Amino acid sequence: MLLNRGKLTNSNGLTFTELLAASIITGIVMIGVASMDISLRNAFEGTSKSSIVASRVSVVMHNISRHILEASGNPTSPGASVAASPGRLWVRRDAPATPSNYADDTWYVYQHDPIQSTVKYCTTTSSATNCITELQKFQNITTFEPTLQNNAATNLFSVKIKLIGRFNAAQPVDALANPEYTVTSVFNLPSFSSTIP
Image (cartoon, rainbow, N blue to C red):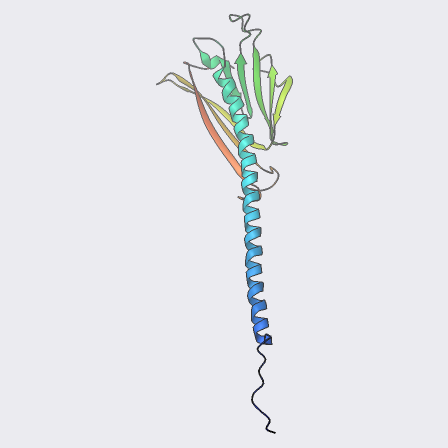
């Protein structure tokens, strides 16, 4: 009887080296997938925060622009219907029943509170006083700069509004974690000068 002493081969399993190589490749792929997932989540979160800040700043600017465009005052000096000081903007609205009487007009005020990073929208009876009745409060506004200018060459009275909002006003700006959004608008009213003190 003859014995076949040929090589014995195992074609049904993996060698340790093959198993180790497959594990390393799988680990590298999993790390790449996890890293991409984290990056996409961070980008989505940053985009969401940017959208929130942009919408809050845009709402404030929209309200201000609506009131400025509806401002009323002396028809020969529309500049008398808007006043500004650092962090405050007053816009006069005429009482419909008495268009010739300015004493009963309402002033809509936008007043910035830098400590709380808000802009209060309220009413008052004079451009010389602060808010009396708060109508609304806008959050996350870090800068509110209304400025008035008279241009003698063009006879235009300009109201320039700069608004800056930040997702978390107490933290420094970060493009993804704490985005900031800035809007600047200029509104022109025909006037020779502003007569508001």
